[in-house]
Amino acid sequence: MAAPAQRIVALSPHLAELAFAAGAGRQLVGVVRHSDYPPAVRDLPQTGDAARVDFERIAMLTPDLVLAWRSGNPAGDVARVEQLGFPVFVTEPAHLTDIPRLLRAIGVLAGTRPAAETARPASSARLRRCAPAMRKRPGCGCSTRSGTGRC
Image 1 (tube, one colour):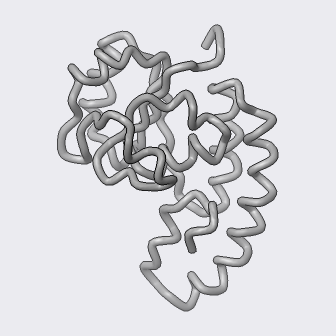
Image 2: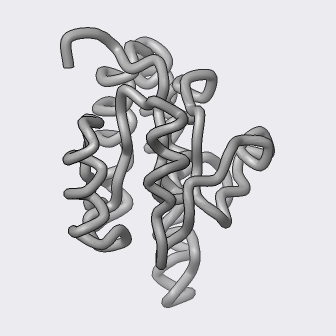
């Protein structure tokens, strides 16, 4: 991208949470249904859900960056958003240890790298605290959270 993103749409609840954690909450202009953390995302326009993306709503929001989840958003939907001319950053966090890297990447794309770098150590510390509990609780929802204290 030529300049930091000023208008971001997140096509997954965890990506909205990561955007906030990376300091890009004020640039977030659209989220999908079930985005609920932090509470501020509840007031943002919704652009669909896992089953259906509202392309018209995305176009009306004129994002300069769309955050997508490789295994959570259908490839055809991601391709359609790109065809509409919006840059898409597609992620696929496979492990909790991917979260600090994603915080940095979103921080770079949104021009909030200092805030993202500040969040990374705190996120890593929270993840270390979550790890023992997760080993004891298979299927714990923590595996999809950004490490922002919601273990």
